[in-house]
Amino acid sequence: MTEAEIEIIIIETLRGLQAGTGEPECEITRATAPLAELGFFDSLLAIETTLVLEERLGCSCGDDSVFRDKNKPEPLTIAEIAARLAQITPAAA
Image (cartoon, rainbow, N blue to C red; front, top):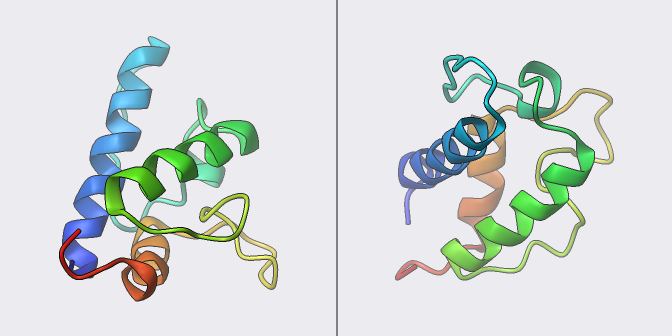
């Protein structure tokens, strides 16, 4: 699975969560850092969403959340998350 395909899955997942919150819709792109830019998205939801993405992609992240890098102070963007997931996602996912 390509990084672009994974980005689409992440964005679709986040849009679905956003729709369920009742908050006004905001643009979610590959440059969006969900933990920093999406008001409805918090660290607990990041853990739950990581589990959903693992299931959809057929991979195991090993971390609590793919939305943060323990070695970086700022949250990751969707493009950065997709690049990390592409490294551990089976090609036929």
